[in-house]
Image 1 (cartoon, rainbow, N blue to C red):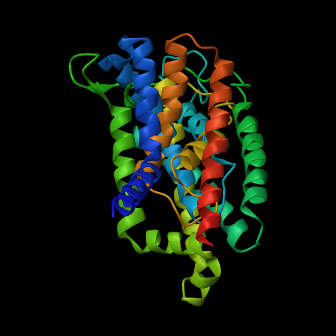
Image 2: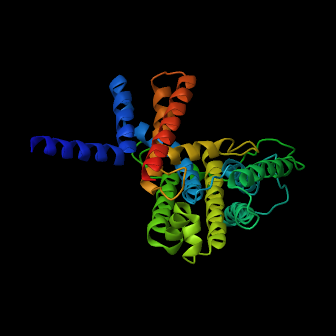
Length: 343
């Protein structure tokens, strides 16, 4: 009887660790760094980590849409770069000496932002059409888009009179989106960009869990053939999903330009790999059909803690890359083991 009880307890413990592994890893990372340097637990450090994570969260949530369908998106970073350049190029102060558009009148803040998000949406829709209608594998389709978008962004960025000069002199009302905050104290304030990320995360959670689109997204990723047989218009919903992801990348690009106070055509480089890695570490299955918003958030925070925390205690960036690589491989291996055991 005792042996049976112990076995059940062991299974319960194993199940708990499996279910909450990502959160356990995050807590262990924070505790480990805090033991080395207790200053890491200060409110200002937490604020900085959240600030740096905000745009990455939005990008990762966009990538999660694609990954849950069983696809992948390598164009995310370049869409971020393009939309950062588009928004920044139209939101410079009138007094700035090297304006991208010297004769552009003062536009309402929301106009360039909407234009940039629509640009991201359109590129996402193109990805979806190529994948759904032309049957090009997502890896190849988005790889082609990644290269093409970078080329288009570079041509735009090289237009006269800018000619590939970093875009600066952004309007205060635009920069405030990325650097402003609620609260009188710099330490005990909530940055607007963090609020944007939280709102996006809530909306995405609702889409994942409470809408037809979310239900069909998981169905497509779980078994695309069964989804077709059950009457789901797979092509239509794939196009929708890629479009939503593109719009989220567009929003992230706008906020990244506002946060950093400028933009170049190299913005967003390799962001897609960080986003995919955060999703995988956060429990989004590489085989499709599995993934949660809290898991994605935890995945982003893990990499932010690694980047910020290990730098904070003076560990070489090269060791940080090694640690990140090991975590990614371990997460994928764990995911594939679960997938094989379910077969």
